[in-house]
Image (tube, helix red, strand yellow):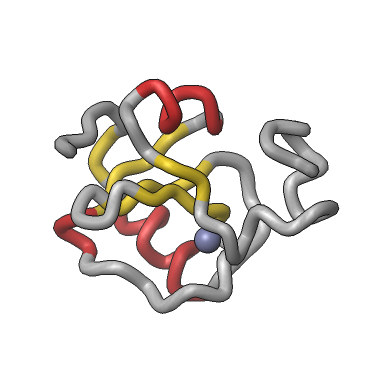
Length: 84
Ligand SMILES: [Zn+2]
């Protein structure tokens, strides 16, 4: 299924992803249709597949699914979205 939405990753977004900082927003990976916190422990995706979202709802609306590794209870307290 094709996913859509998000914006192109900036150099700063890419640097944040690689250093796994805790920050606002999410990154989506268009090749897998998964979206993650920047602090997600998963392996970094290819940069060309990266899309940036401000809020989880935006990613969901584009057809992305929440990554299970960074959606653990507590991790996502900031937005409350999908915290269970
Ligand atoms: Zn993740």
